[in-house]
Amino acid sequence: MTTSDSGSKVNAAVAGDLAYVAAALRRREVDVTPLPIALYWAIYTAVGFSMIDFIPRYCGVWFGVMGVAGWVFAFWSGARDARKEGVFSSEDGKRQMLHWGTIVLGVAGAWGIVSGGGLRPMVASQITVLAVGLVYFLAGVHFDRRYLPLGLILIAGSIVTGFVDRWAWTGLGAAVAVGLVLLAVVPRRNVASVA
Image 1 (spheres, rainbow, N blue to C red):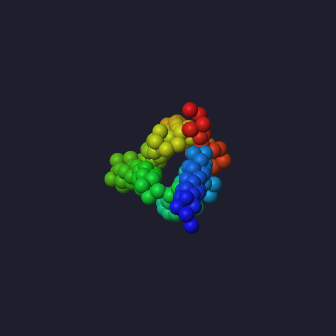
Image 2: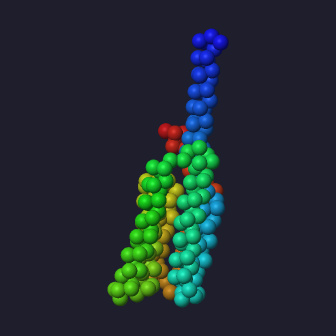
């Protein structure tokens, strides 16, 4: 085998590797939130928020148990999908975990104040939704602009639920659930094609 033959085999291998990376990046640029993750959180939100209106006594158990299960499922499923697409990055995974884990801090803070007698549970629920809305809005600023409207809906909902007595939580849960499903079916715009 001549030097030129081995050089062309190396060039072909490099070209193949670059094509794989380019294809993975193109898939990532028009990414959607994985449907199983979006559906899980949509159901979690719709059921949990409706429970606040109809059976508030049990909603804490729902949010606690199903929230922990959802975090585990979302991080496992997201990492699995990223590996399958060839775009897994432990650095990105850590950043995502820290970002979305901030919700846990907001929830713990609000309910810690309740346990100290500083807040009524319904006000803590509104503060929790405000914190979640801010985390979603910041996801729109830092990761994917499609999260911005969901953040604004949650922030507005944290206010509206204090003024509307009937069905406010159920309506907010339905609106957020629809928004979450849309994240799974409406692709993110390819930034490179916009420029």
